[in-house]
Amino acid sequence: MPQKFSKRPSLIHFPLFQGRRATPSVKGLKQLLEYHGVVLQQETLEQLWAYHQLLREHNKDQDLTRLNAFETIVERHYADCTLINAYVPKWPKRMIDVGSGAGFPGIPLKLVNPEIRLTLCEPRPNRIEFLNLVIRELGLQGIDVFGHKVTSRSLTFPVEGVISRAFEKIELTLPRIQKALVPGGKAYFMKGPAVQEELATLHPEDFGFKLAGKYFYRIPQSTQDRALIVLEKE
Ligand SMILES: C[S@@+](CC[C@H](N)C(=O)[O-])C[C@H]1O[C@@H](n2cnc3c(N)ncnc32)[C@H](O)[C@@H]1O
Image 1 (cartoon, rainbow, N blue to C red):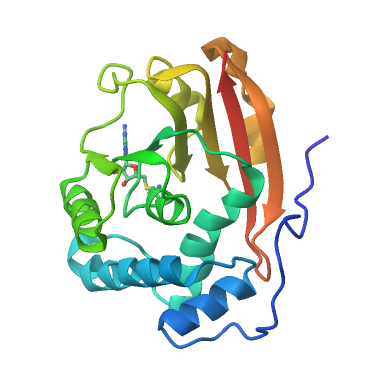
Image 2 (cartoon, rainbow, N blue to C red):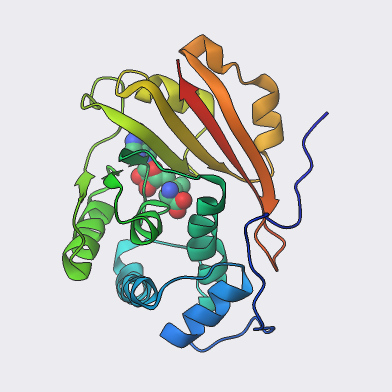
């Protein structure tokens, strides 16, 4: 039986803000995030706002995101990439984000979990440049960019965690990360509704992994179904 997507993640608050429209500003960002069930500290909000401004400023020449409206960017990028915290009690210390693009989920994940030592893996030169700019401008520590394709040969340093969103089928990513991920390490896959078909044919044991968790939910106050699939390296 396919899993049903639940309407609300369990650890989420629903604050008072009831509208979806908000002026692009730190305040508007806070209101929209809270509307989607994400409550952040003021300092984190300000960092996310600084990132948003860089994203807007460089989007035209660097082809970073196809989303345009502030509300949509907050819902599908920032809320999406921070809601996952509700399902992971403790993130691994040393992680990579495979296929980061403009920094999703890596940058929001790092902002809400500054203790993670994170490497953003992205081969496209304009995106590498943008990610390095974000790191510099926001003064982030414990984060760097691996500007190459992740393959079983290129990724040689050991990591305890891997995350990716909108990248490729899980069965294609597992061989890429098989060597780098330490035994007991976890791989987190952020997926949309098509995950059901993918899971039906996925055999993680063929790659030395076992299923450690699967969570199906909807971004609060949206039509966006999401899943977080967690695999553990045996
Ligand atoms: C569809 S985008 C998703 C970007 C981001 N994760 C998101 O959710 O918005 C996939 C990204 O993976 C990058 N990519 C493609 N092959 C890769 C590989 N072998 N290793 C790392 N990144 C790769 C592409 O350059 C692209 O930026």
